[in-house]
Length: 210
Ligand SMILES: [Zn+2]
Ligand SMILES: [Zn+2]
Image 1 (cartoon, rainbow, N blue to C red):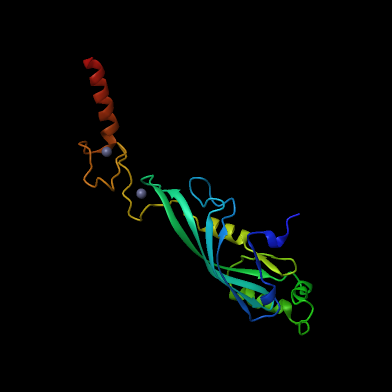
Image 2 (cartoon, protein in one colour):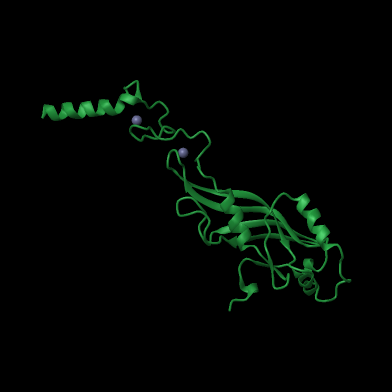
């Protein structure tokens, strides 16, 4: 069976989980988990996702605050040009200790006694942070597994209608010419509603001429 520490997404956090008020910086690449978008719009499985930020320990768990930058692949919904860009997303998530027992285990049993008012603290935290994103710690708080955090954060942030640039002019609706490259492009027909009829007329005339 695979061990937690062998996961490419498991970050050892036992040192800071030992007591509140400590932090651990993260600044490294992690492989993109599967399931972020699809082949057309998304982030390829295994592509490097740069994670920077830090874990901060509070009484009831660890808060991760940072930024993900992932290579985003898609195509422009207007001109169909491939888009290949770094996609930055800010993230704040919470890794709660499952129970006091987990916290004590993370302390290695040498903590300075139990902390009362645990439920109260959870409520305070929930009030401070609007985000509902929480992820479990593994191995009694020894590891934070950020696979789901990476996937969820990137999936939520993927654009529904990616554009190569905000003012992309797209393609000509009649002939498909890229209007970004041919800004002067237009057709003789003054009303595009008649363009199809004009084309049909030309086709009929051509057939009659044969
Ligand atoms: Zn475009
Ligand atoms: Zn055209």
